[in-house]
Length: 234
View 1 (cartoon, one colour):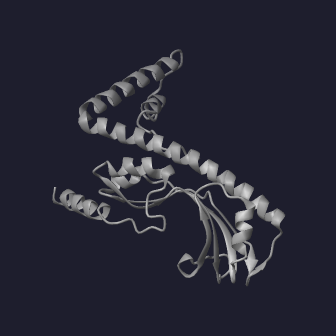
View 2 (cartoon, one colour):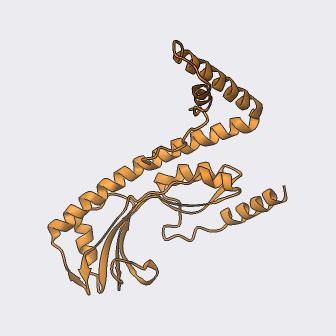
View 3 (cartoon, one colour):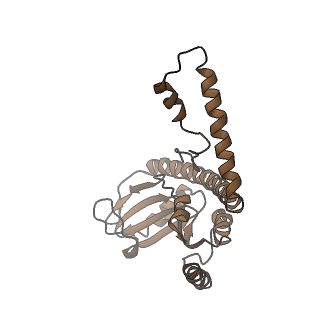
């Protein structure tokens, strides 16, 4: 109880602070997801980004961009056009890099089991250098091609946010039902196992049911127990 009270105080303190992000508010495409998490006592968000296309100007080591020591030439959470990028590149003095960054969501969780619900990682990004020491190293046609890819990733990112929201909402609702009726869940699993065991024995009807294959039937995985909250290809 003491740990929960401490977490609640920490949550209230963090959510009560001013938004210090560049935009100063939660992105529209992720606002509903942030509201869902902050509405649950076991979570609160510390920062978020719905996904963005940006152009950074910096001295880079290889392909690694240090955003703390760079100039933001362009940033948008909407589809981007070539003219905007070309205009922004004229301000570049160092090594400009075009990036697409997908959904970023930082969440504090009360317990480890709460964090496991949110354990999702994506490599849905893009990072391409365009200039070196202020000199454009690619053609405008190539920039147009890159933006087509980046904009497609932006649209796919929105679909993934919606899918993640729906999966998370379903998982939290199921968790609430389990907390309210834990005994019923145990009975349901027990009945499910009994029915499946009976079906497996019926499938084996007509065969010699030895001690070995009888144990194999009993050790079959129950599909209702091994449920994946989020699909593997998320």
